[in-house]
Amino acid sequence: MVYDVLIAGLGPVGQLLANLLGARGMRVLAVDPASGPSGQPRAATTDDRALRIIQGVGLVEALTAHLVVQPRVSFVSADGRRLTLLETGPGPNGHPTLVGWHQPGAEKELLAGLGRFPSVRASWDVSVGRLQPTADTVQVGLSDGTTVEAAWVVACDGAGSTVRRLSGIGFAGSTFAQRWLVIDTQVASTPDGLDHVHFIGDPRRPAVTLPTAAGRHRWEFQGDGGVPSASVEGTLERQAVYEFHARTADRWRAGRVLLAGDAAHVMPPFGGQGLAEGMR
Image (cartoon, rainbow, N blue to C red):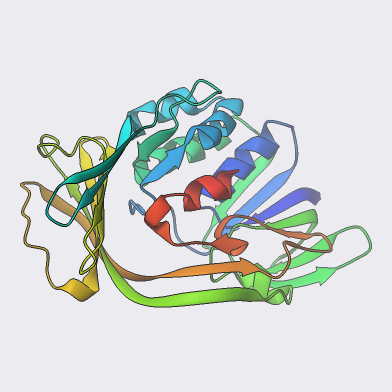
């Protein structure tokens, strides 16, 4: 069988794409080298335009439990003075402009949605190892020893995309030397005054904090300024240190190979647009 589309990568972008294609009756094979979803709350926000796309595949109601509306955004100084307050409000398509997003729960719903489509097959523990374009298809060698054919291949396999590398596409841009600490907590109640997004403009240690749905809260601190002194009662769910990147692929298509999500573009997470841009 020749698949209409082979999707490399089963993160949120690959999951959403598989739903979109399945809803149109296309024959889809989606593969990922991991043994299953990461279970990590990586992305913390998305927006109204991404929700409109999710609505289009009939899953926005299922995701509601994993979202929280961000009604406003505060910018505050290092000493806690509010500098600006932005009211986000609903977007023109009826969805809230900005929402907190709990990725593990949202991914569970997106993956469950694939079960509606008999033409979609998702395979974990399988990676792309070889691409061989033909006149009308791409032959794809997989790590399980099989070779499949697809009319199109879409790379949703992240910033370190194997498909992008195999296609000979460069990934120009910058990696910033700043190190950031990300902390995700489960909290019994939202910390006082932190029921929406706060950007903290401390030149010694910029930070952002926001609720991310399902009784969780995200904190991000630039790591160069020492250990944060604030304390919050809650359960630590995840902590990670990262250096952020700003890169875009030299081109987003090579013949019948297309790039999407982080495989095509990565950006600093401070504005919370990485996931939303990938979905759009």
